[in-house]
Length: 409
Image (cartoon, rainbow, N blue to C red; front, top):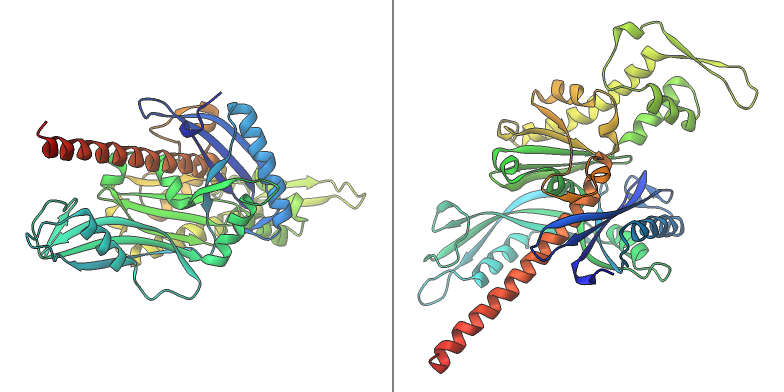
């Protein structure tokens, strides 16, 4: 049996699937993925709960499968969230250093971050993350850790990610329902989680864009200078491609999804011009001829639009020139053939299909782009746990130092 303190679980309740990933932290602090469970998602639309009962059942199925594979008992999870209500922005907090010696303490930093979070937010908003970026001391920018420095004015830049409190609670209530009885360790934006799974420290430093192309939403995050600079959510994903095909080809949604998976692509192919595919109807209706060139064109236009919307947002934020590490695509949409070619044409940058980095364990899970967010949730939990352990150890060390001075040891 595993020590529960070493087990970390990430849970993504997505539009297309529910995914639970189990990780274990060993004595050296290394993270190892030991189990994965997934179930088809039926109670979610555009990354938000619309049928709690169905969502509970799907979560239970994914959790049970993850427990069976890992041999661990799951009692709490790091919950990934997304949706059109989630947005990110940058803000600056200012704090005057009032101590007699003007030495900046951790408390001063916390006060500066609080001031950065104290913005006029829409009613019923909830801050999911307030990530420190850089500090400024008495007008000197680029300070990474001001603790111990002398100064009279401390400023901090933070990236704030917020969502609608009520809509976030719908997912939390599913997880904590009497049927599941799970605790939520923390709520994490899926775009941030995917970035933690895919990007190395160097890629965060030189500038990289992560796009998680899911079924109901597309989450994205930009890292540069080692910190998150920008994030966003589009309420458009793979399901919208399916809907476009259903309308454009005049076929049922189930048939449109099948055509997308079996014959879809993100790029146009002149060789398919005039080629057709005969689809036989199981209900005895006449067979239908599908124009393959038309199918590809429909997919191309929708996927191109998604990338163009992100590119336009980043251009407006002045971030395109910061992306020397290129673009990383994950989520189920990363499986669309030639999706990297389309992204390369839109962004004019190198494009990589995402694979989890800096994590060991089940290769079958680490290589799957659709597991990136759930794996990143586990990584988020491991970093949080290491930070707590480090703080606890530091506190113990400081106590020993104080005791030695106090008793003349």
